[in-house]
Image 1 (tube, rainbow, N blue to C red):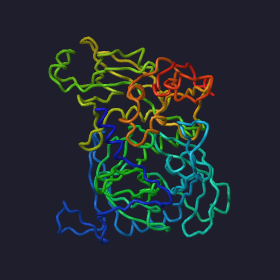
Image 2 (spheres, rainbow, N blue to C red):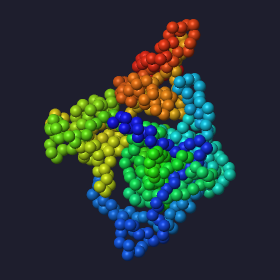
Image 3 (tube, one colour):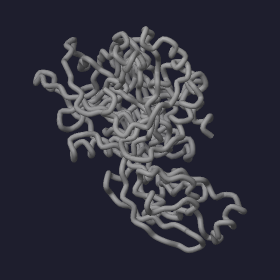
Image 4 (cartoon, helix red, strand yellow):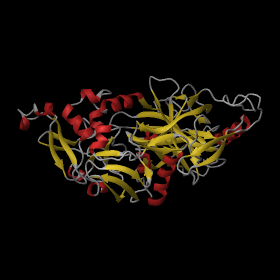
Length: 486
């Protein structure tokens, strides 16, 4: 299962490359005529707007959604032209093998768009490890200095601010909409590779489900569209009607017409956390490793009744509030009153299902959740406080310099995944196996804990004879706090 996720992560790529601009090349948009007739409708019916009825599973009611004609699309595009900007970033990443120096500077380009409050929303990987950021409006030759106000690397989102009053003249903000339904059309605006001017393309929604975010290596909801997202497109809005349906951020390499946009619930969660606390707060987690209960013998062993469904708790993060409440081999039946299926999914809209982790991730820090479970054949209900959890080995270290300690030529560093990434794209197989297993599987035992390793030996008379230690890449100690290495 782990190797499968590693392979999937390799195929997912962020879309912000050197000297490239940004946009999705969308295909198959259904708006070719002012009067739209869906392929599944009676072709004798002629009208410019039709309604899609969809049942909301959580509310058990039908709601009406509409698809827009070409005229509506043109109006949305005209609105977006005064909101979408091109972002120019100069960045420099640390060298984790030589943590006292940085790598060469590189220039990247991406897209962003204006949101209420005179702010620009873009992708985190567009401005990761930035040293200098400029933005340019559509139709303007002038570039303006921008500052990064907040970054959420897990959700791959960032907010920029521009101090110049001249920049905001004639700019319009875009409002956030809702999650589009399957086959609803979206228009994606941005700056793709192959040109310098803004570009607009169209596509339709293919799938809505949790997806691996390649930049932050997290599992959050994403929207798949039937269009390839080109490098440099990152941060461009996907417009549905006159509102934003998502933010373009990555594609699936080796596949045709598979691109991904960040949905509005994730965007709102990111923005709300910043508005409430002034900084990025992260996404909550229960800190559980769960196993499906689809096997009949497994269900019988844990005394599950035929009408019961849920997942088996196999591991609990000691830093989670659930550690003192839940136990190994508990069966989680419901989360906040929503039944969990044997495969770990919950109802989502009309005959769609989504993993219950999405319900957890949409909770605000310090919010509580009511968990119903089966333990030793009896049903119990507990209230758990949810918090963002930090892994023992950090998944990313963007926008900060790595810590290190040198003693007698022995270089000690905290173990991080970016350190392992220095072994190349195939780091999972080429990095030291022991360190790789610790990075991916080990759980922290106390807050602030980190793994310290001997990275290399700087040869000198004082450490003569110890040069072989550099080949061991050995785990040295579990440090209590990250401040112990400077």
